[in-house]
Image (tube, rainbow, N blue to C red; front, side, top):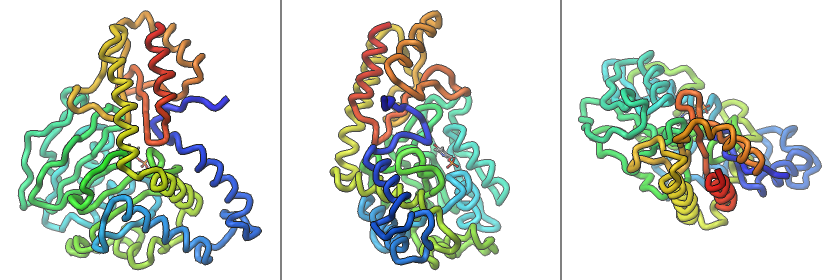
Length: 351
Ligand SMILES: *Cc1c(COP(=O)(O)O)cnc(C)c1O
């Protein structure tokens, strides 16, 4: 039986994507070869890369001033590539510290240059999004994390800053409509909401590059990847293809607008249960609750064994909270059907 997969990442993808991706491993496009054994420079794969880059711009409604890259190294390597490419030798960058991943981004940036943490919710174990700060033009860029996968908080709006706006969108990219043109650089590890592990999406406004006065190692230089159309070295062909299939599936099913309607309904169903069921309480501040990663705990620890047994028996997988938060985390990414959320809600009602 296929399980109800609430894993935080790598995570659920549309069933159709699993099907098509497996077919391509056996025989890609009917060419008598596997996707995994053809040159990344063959016309069949180049077409995949071109379309995978184009579909991102269509979904995000972005023009030709933006470039789309598929890189390796995960969002974690972007923690380093962003300051390498945007932080000038004498300049400084502004960061918000809203969780484990934001802290990781800050740590890497500090290896490259000057960093100010302009807001943080660390003192309360990252259970809210700090909003009371300003970022002036003395900074080369401002970096934020749109959705804090581990703690279950999400930025509902983005601050107007007097500098470049850079965002780690790993865990809520393509989940809701945003004015994507307000960002100068967006990055995301694919494995949360857009594909398998191994590919990292970068969307960057071309005009912001080349201004730091730094020598940038070849792989870390966005300009190199733009120039070579994400083929500077061998790209992660399978991860790019499966990400492309996922985005195509999204586009064919109403795009981000339709996904957002479904995501809102799933989140409402689950948070309503958390708020009305005396056995549970939410972890994140109500106004900052993530619509992708729902964190909650039992109010009475003695019910843990019964609850754990019940959700496992219902075919639910991946519900345990991250070790730094405890409790439970239900990740309800784009591909999660509302029926699976209903199964979880029914189990919550039953204990
Ligand atoms: C998972 C995650 C990361 C780390 O991604 P990798 O691709 O594993 O490097 C970074 N930021 C956020 C918000 C994440 O959810």
